[in-house]
Each structure stands twice: as C-alpha cells, then as structure tokens.
Amino acid sequence: MKKVVLAPQGFKESLTGMEIAEAMSAGVKRVWPEAETVLIPVADGGDGTLQALVDSSGGEVRTASVEDAIGRPIDADWGALGNGTTAVIEVANAVGLARLTLEERDVRRASTYGVGQLIVEALDAGFTEFIIAIGGSATNDGGAGMVQAMGGRLSDRDGHELPRGGIALADLAKIDVSGLDSRMAGADVVVACDVNNPLCGPLGASAIFGPQKGASSEDVRELDAALANYAEVISRDLHTDVAEIPGAGASGGLGAGLMGFFDARLRLGADIVLDAVNIDKHLKGADLVIVGEGQFDRSTVFNKSPVAVAQRAKINGTPVIGVAGSLGAGFREVHEHGIDAVFSLVNRPMSLKAAMEDTRRLVTIATEEACRAIELGAQT
Image 1: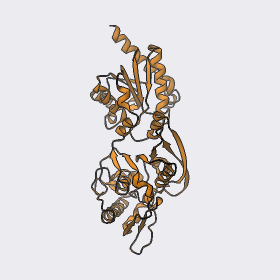
Image 2: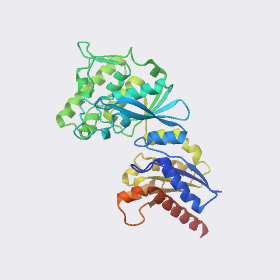
Image 3: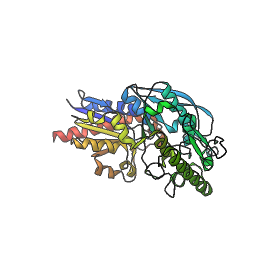
Image 4: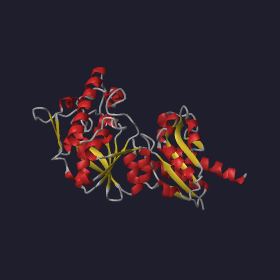
C-alpha cells in the first residue's frame, strides 16, 4: 500500500492548506484507492501560518478584541495549538497593512499595541510558548507598542510616557520593565522571520520596509533615527544590543523588540512550521510527497515551504510532485531544489476568478493526473 504525504500551503484568497490537502487526497484515491494519505498543511511563516499550525495540531482558532495599527477596536484571530501550551500569533491579524486603506496608513504613528494585547490574551489562557509570525505589519515602532500593551513603560526626559508610534521613539529616554507582564519571563518565544535586515541604516526597517507602508523619504530618515535611539536605550537599560542582529529590522523593527524584551529566537518561518507539524516523522516511509501553493515561480526557491518540504523529503530519496494554481516566471528552478515535476490547475483557457472559484475540483484533477503519470511510469 502506498503512503502519500500531502503537504500544501493554502492558496491565497481561495482554500486553506487543509482544504487543498483534502482535494489532493481525493485525486490520489482515484488512482490508488487503498493508499494511505497523510494530510499535513504547511506554511512559510507568512499568510496561512496560523491556520496551518492549528489544522495540523488539532488546535483551534480563537478571537480577541484588540486595537489595529491606528488604534481602532477590531477582532483578531490567534491560534491555540493542540498541545495546549503553544499559541500562534500572526502580527498581520492585529496590525496588518492589509487592514488599512492607502489613506489610513500612518507609519509614523502606527503601533504594535494590538500585538501585545494578543499575547496577553494567550497568557491569560495559560499558554507559555509562542510562535509569532511577524510579516505584513503596518508599523515601524520596533515593538514599542507591544511592550506598552504588556505593562512596560517608555518615557521621555521629563518622565512622561511616550505616545504610540515609531516617531515618538526619538524622544525615548528611559525604559522601565518593572511592570512588564512577569509571565513572559518563563515563556518561550520563537519568531518566524525570513529577512536578515538590521534595525537601522540603509538596509534597516525604515529604509527597506517603510516606503511600502507609506513613508516618505523624510519619514524614513526620521523613523530610522528614532529606532537608532530606541536601540541605544534598550542597550543601556536592558543590556541587550539589538541594532545589528540579523532580522532585528523585520516587521518595522518588531524583531528587535521581541529579542530585546523577551529573548526571542528568530528562525526561518518554513522551518518553524515544518518542525511544529513533525514533518520529518510523517515523511519517513513515504512513497510520494505532494506539495503545493498558489503559484510556483522563481521566488518559490527562497525560504518557501514547498521547497523546504521537498528538501527534507529528498533526505529519504522520496519523489516530490508540486501542484500550483499557476506557473510563473522561473518556475523550473524548483526542479533544482527537490521538486521533481509540477502541475498547474489551469487545464483550459479560464479567468483567474473562474480558477479560484473551482480550485477544489481543479486540485483534485491535477493531483489525479500526476498520480496517473507516476503509475504509468511504474508500468513501463
């Protein structure tokens, strides 16, 4: 009996990773009815990380009332994993850029306060381990708002607490962590981070990521100086140097805040997810692995989960098939990184809208045809 591991990402704005895996399983069963299909939805630390980890662990998605990046009350999801100890926080769910219109973006004053509220919600529920996916934020405050939401005090030279937002960090003179939630002292924090940018400078948070959040060239200069001051005060008051650590500049400097205040560890998002779902255990004894994402292209080889899964599968010499919504420029590069063949869902002329509305059926068909090709090869 064949063992087939199905480890797709979700297809953005279409189906979740688990739904894609279920559709793949249906295709496998059309060719090998007796096959054991192992459904392991994955992610790379970006969109879909929370859902993939919840689905794979038998956990649940919970909702908390928090503030978005500009202080409006919203409901944001977080994940409670099946082990009962690990919470998943997707920063973008609370303070994501996608939550704001172009007119609403205010990178100078945007705050990670809502992220701190989500962490407190998980602490109140008894969770002691955190996986934090930090991509997609609208903020550039170095995690200062998160710290304020959790009881830390950031004050200016006159002892007044700073207002929220990255630009206020130019006036930071003292950090007082005596009121910071003491439960974090025993917490384990792992951050899904796929960039190596330092906090400040030409490759820092403000210069590289600020413009996409609405920062002008003058904003970039002032925000960079504010984060530099923030790093100096963290170094003096917390005895932690965060300015030059690779990844400190991720998500508007949130990486620096998580490392400086909570001793967080930064890892590639795909590796965090694959370890959390015990992918290596599931890959043992597999006859075939099928991965998938919305589009295979040149970027797929850079820290994305399909290639990460494929490379682990190749340790055991297992063949790997890829199923994607479409095949973009440079997709053949995945063949050099462990994915042996790829199949597109688009089997006739159709619009993107039509393909997305019919994703489940198309995934099943593409998977079935991939398996039939393998079966034919085995017979010749």
